[in-house]
Amino acid sequence: MNPRALALWSLSAVTIALATGNPVYRVVVLLCALNLLVVMRRPGTSLRGLVIALVVAAVIAMAVTTLASHTGHHVLASLPSGIPVIGGPLTFEAAAFGVATGLGIAASVLGAASLSVVLQPHELIDALPAALARTGAAVGTALNLIPGVARSAVEIRDAQRMRGWRSRRIREWPDLAVPVVLTALESSLTMAEAMEARGYGSGARTHYAEQVWRGGDLIVAVVAAVAAAVFVGLRIAGVITDWYPFPDLAWPHVEVAGVMCCVALTVPLLVWRR
Amino acid sequence: MIRSLCRLALVAPLLAMALGAFSSVAGIGLVVPLCAHAASSHRVGLVVQHGDGQVIRRCIGFDGSTISAVAVLQASGLEIGLDTYGSLGAAVCQIDHEPAGYTTCLPASGSYWVLFISHAGGAWATSTTGASSTYVGGGDDIGFRFDPLGGPDPPPPTAAGTCPAIAPATAAPSSSASGRTPAPARTTSQPARAIPSAATGSTSGVLATAPTPAGTLPRARAATAVASSAKAQINLGLLAAVTAIGGLFGLLGAQAVRRRRR
Image (cartoon, rainbow over all chains, first blue to last red; front, side, top):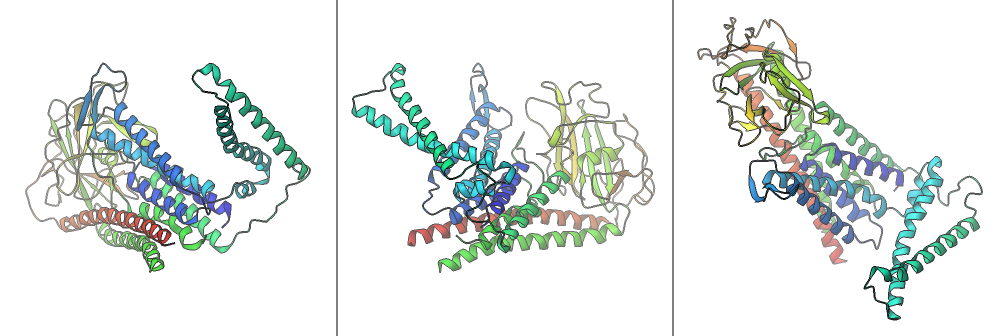
């Protein structure tokens, strides 16, 4: 698969998910993205952490909307009005809007997650246009150091504990933070020397393997781009409408054409094989 | 077996797509010929209830398959004030000079115009979208009620009889129920002032301002057919969505089963 085709698919999925507040379309996009991640993810990659994080984010979004929005006619419970921001009636309509918001977050994140779950980081950097190659390499390298810093922090904490260190007070945290920062700096210098030894920045960018566009990649890119364009066009034309549960909850209006655009995002499952 | 399940789960969304394409084509096929036979093939009832309880009724004729609530208001001849809210569309701030003046379209306190919709003679329901994003088809009704922000939103009076069952071959007397804004009466065949509406390529105008004696309307069956067609399209949209969601869930399940067997 071509990383640029996948990036275009990801952009289309996020565009469709954010173009409307209709939860039905968002559910279809979310399921398309989830299927793609399950089928196309890199071997040995687990989706568990991502799914848990998304569920937590969606629940927080729903809770915040329910607590902060007091619009709607069907009252579930009431908090004392003296409490700032959250005081007042908690309505069923606000909870429903929170669910739609959470679905939007989940669909967008899953759409974008394909870039990190399906592709190798070097594939993504290699797919950047020449003008962004250096910036992409710098950002990618910096992001790649984050897991390493986290690992070294855990190792240093364990080592300090073996020496009898306990993190009871904030005043004792430098015992952990200073070695972590020094280790991170040392890792960065090592990385820089390694890149320089491999000729980074000495000339025009070269490729270990050229990324080629195959027929399947073209199909995915074209179908995803057309689906997103049609969806946005229908949204601007008013054929596809937003959904608001206020003041009374009602079923969202669903257009067949909108569903078709969302379902078109399943095309990578038909043409790509992992 | 698992491969077959996977293929079946993939085929389900494709079937939904094919179904959607068929329904879209079917909808166009039903609507276009009917519109081609008359200047205004479809009618929408408009009921406006002022804060003091006075009611204005209009029957709006239009071409095209749907028309927006704003276009219906514009075609009614009533004085209206609109304000745009970005991507949310237009909000109705003022109808028939009520409120007499305003600085904010949707005030934090006070009253505002609540939009109601009734599909094919059904009960009133508050619209989930703004007036410029709310579309109705032939046989539907639109209601506006000037209502306080707090408390429930009781619907306006029923729209039954707003659109007469007889073709207004002669111009109906121009009289408003409230008498605030005289509206011009028009016939279907000779609209006095055709106002472009939000519906694509359509024109609209007031067909009647008061109920007329029951009779036979040559286009009544056509309007009913169009209303049924719009209803069927909505159902097919939901059907397609449910089919797609079911198919995608099935695909996920098939992947889980295959992974477990490995």
